[in-house]
Structures are given as C-alpha cells and as structure tokens.
Length: 256
Image 1 (tube, rainbow, N blue to C red):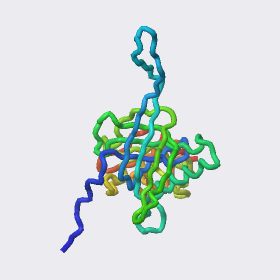
Image 2 (image 1 turned 90 degrees about the horizontal axis):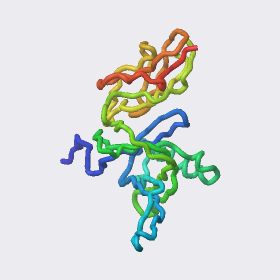
Image 3 (image 1 turned 180 degrees about the vertical axis):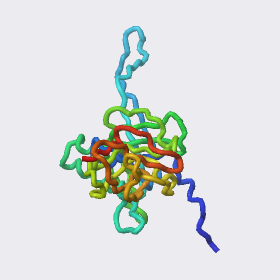
Image 4 (image 1 turned 90 degrees about the vertical axis):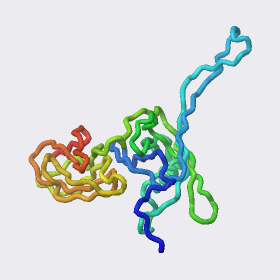
C-alpha cells in the first residue's frame, strides 16, 4: 500500500532560491517565490568596438557596462485551500499589469538570488527588477508561466541569507504605537522564522518584554501584538532555536 513519504526533498528542489520583496520601499519584506520549475540568472557584458589600426584587422572590444536578468518558469499556484493565487505570484502578476499604465520605476521591486543550502558559492546577489515578460503556457493540463525579471541598476553581491539560520528583522510596520500596548498588530519582516517549512520561533519581544501574542505567517513574516511599554524606542527581537536577531535600526519600535 502506498504511504506518504516523510522526505519532501526531490529533484525539483533547485540549487538556488529566489526571494521577492513585496513591501513598499523603504520597508523590506522578502518572501520566497514558490513553484519554480526552472530559473537562471543571466549576466551579460555590454561592449563596443575598440579596434585600431595597429590591430591589423583583428577584432577588439571594450566593456562599457553590463546587464542582468532572471528567467524563470513557474507553476501557477494557489494557496493550500485552493481559494486564491499564491500571494507572491499574484504580486508579480500585478506588477506586470501595472506597467500598462505606469512607469517602470513605479513597478520595480527587490529580488535576492542565492544558494538554498547556504553555500557561499559566489552567486548570492541582490538587486531591483521589473517584470519584463509574462507568458502563460497556453497548453492543456497544469498551467505554467514563463517570466523575465529585468535587472534595473546594479547587481550587488551579498552574504548568503541562508548561510545562517539565526533570525533577522529587516523591517517592522507600523514602527510606532501607544505606551498602553495591545492597540495594534505589528508586521515583523525578516528571515528564518520558519526554516524548511517548520515554525521555529520561541519568542517575540519588544524591548525585552514578550509580545502579547504573535503568529508566524511565513519564513519572512510575523504578526505580533506589542505589550505595554514606556515612552521611547525599543528593539524588536525574534528568537528561535538558532539564536536571537541582532539589533539594527530596522527593528526599532517607538512607544509614544
């Protein structure tokens, strides 16, 4: 009799991961793009002829810049209940449609590309892109989408975000609340809240005081209810079995 496999890692688990920043600048909220069947990062040098008489007819070129893009095929996916399109895929679709009436600059967003096993392979990058191409398969059966994410500006080398499972806090919203606490829900964005699909958060604290309550939405998103606090700025910390997030300006929460 067939049984449910205990290991979910298959040949479809590609070597690299693509994260999409779905927040509005300057807030940062990277979320993993799920359903990737194929993906590749292409970097191309831009050149111009630089041949001179002394080259005796041999070709010579000078590099004047570079361009980059990410080409991917994704399985068009819904949530587990089948009631809505996967949130990150829906975000990409909305950004492509926005280009019909808006400028490219208004439709840009951040991406991260890195080895999912945490290896420092020299291919961990971050940059801004827009959705240049959106091509549904048009065939029968399950639907796939071919997309091109065209790089805008520099492609920056970064430390592999998966190199350590210690959680990070990259932004919070809103970043201000009353001293009474419990008056709002605070979105906490970062990484390593649900590594490998398993929730690992053991504490969420505002200035060392536990949150009234919190829910781990995804590996990069927590919603929390702040406790009461004294007027001033405190650090929002997330703790997992791997450690506690490091203090940065991005995790500051102000009681007023």
